[in-house]
Length: 168
Image 1: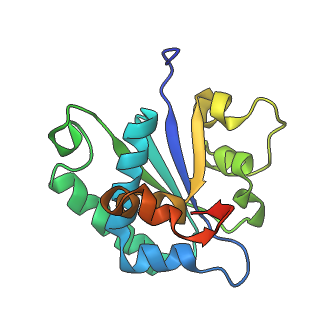
Image 2: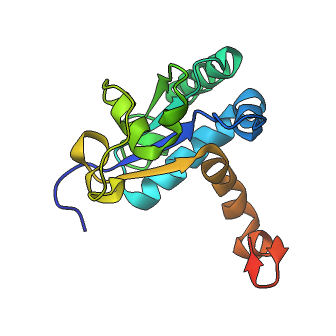
């Protein structure tokens, strides 16, 4: 139930942990899957927009993502009446400045708002008062990018991964 404020999806593509490159590979080789996942997640949570916060050093990945976003807008998959659904959904790309602390979700939100990337006191939590004081879900690239495949293959497929008591 909405209280009248917009809600947002924020995708953390900062990937600042040393040796981690899963998000980079998705943005490098399949940026459309990330954008499709943003739309799916956005519709599911009734978000008006997604913000992808990408690591500043990921120049090629950023260019790939920007190109894919332009293609998606040109094809009518994003923006006004996304996919001909009557649903408006925008995707914005924000470039981080390399601050490790911006991997923490509230520091990332501060940076997105143009402030110094420092963690906020909690509560309130981003789900209630996140980006611009609105309800916000902060998640990672891999989670969002796998959602189109889960929808195509089904929940049983995804649940088949992992261990018996800790499945997909």
